Length: 553
Image 1 (tube, rainbow, N blue to C red):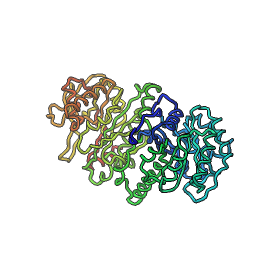
Image 2 (cartoon, rainbow, N blue to C red; image 1 turned 135 degrees about the vertical axis):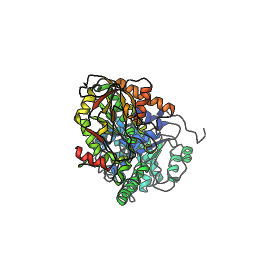
Image 3 (spheres, rainbow, N blue to C red; image 1 turned 120 degrees about the horizontal axis):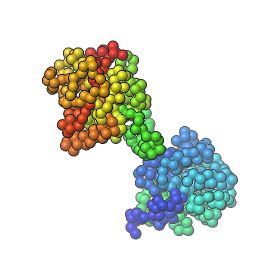
Image 4 (cartoon, rainbow, N blue to C red; image 1 turned 90 degrees about the horizontal axis):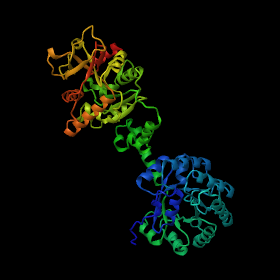
């Protein structure tokens, strides 16, 4: 076999227990690798990267807890961290067990508890408790061989999983006691029942580690940690017959580098603008931690949300007509009498019994961070229109769903009426449209034609249908103005999703407005209902509208 070949190991067999897979890696004829992790998130990342096993580093776990690598974290605290790590990942974990957390009695209890938590193995080192990190100081004292072999036997006798692995770490080279002492200890630990030996060195070259392996031969697997001799080509370890290489603390060190850089930059610049493009998104964190699985589980185990409406608010645009007010925030977050406009809108929905609210963000998206809302991002908002934003939330267009622009305000009764109205797709239409005036020459209105005019005798149970919608309707065609609020039933949600998919296939999705969407559905023969309202709403496009919003409230 070529030294560059990567043999298939039984460690790849997911039908085996985690302990059995770790044992298979240790006993594999090829070179295997363990990557450091120190908490549940880093364990997920190691598995996501493709590693078949994890090294739960004592240094890294301690540092992540903010303490020194001197047994300052108790073994029960370490065990709590390990439980999160084993739950978060499906690959085996070999734990850096320091000196065994005390004498043989402490250690055998540790082993039983690790087996209960599905930890695959533990590595203990032949130094004195409390331990000192191997790279600190010189001439560290070593444990008595007989005491340490007794600890190994106690651990093996206490494991409840027959495949649980115990790796004995030899510190003779670290302590400066030489190769002969390392080999003497290796033989004693092997005879005591260790599943593998870890030979450790802090020299910048691998010579003494490779010399140990040459003298030791193949009597049992050998594990190494090339933290100091990192320049040694990995193929040399393959040629020497090393079983496992541990990359011991590099995720922790990388994270410290990144966190320092980000923290210092934010402190210096007093803004997030410079760092957002260089770090993962919050959505990525949700993906790593498995939020999708929770959503699926909720569908299986929670009561149906069929009678619980949801709302999608389109708030991706800047609102450039508001000038400097939207320089650092989208218009939905401008202040209206002490609260952001969007918060006012969300409160209206909440008070009307709609609490499942998704906001589609775009411009200055991180400013939209209200509690109790979900957010979805349209990162191409500058070159797309409203339907592209709506499509970002397509998965939320289910059951009863309300869609609204994020820059409108309306009275509570309008929400009550549109929810109670019959029809799979219902638009709220202002019959008093002519009373709305603006000095804005670029004012665009969502005008509508309907199957019947509004009258003071108009009854909610009378069905009025939309016949046309668009800014270019003639005066005698117009029965009202769509206020930017629509309701969909489960069937209506299905129809809207189908129309958006058709627009996507035709290449028209990115530039389509909500008016285009409804006009296209009319052309397709869909029945769209309307309810008439008489004012009691407004949208905020410019400074005059903002002043009216204050009066409205």
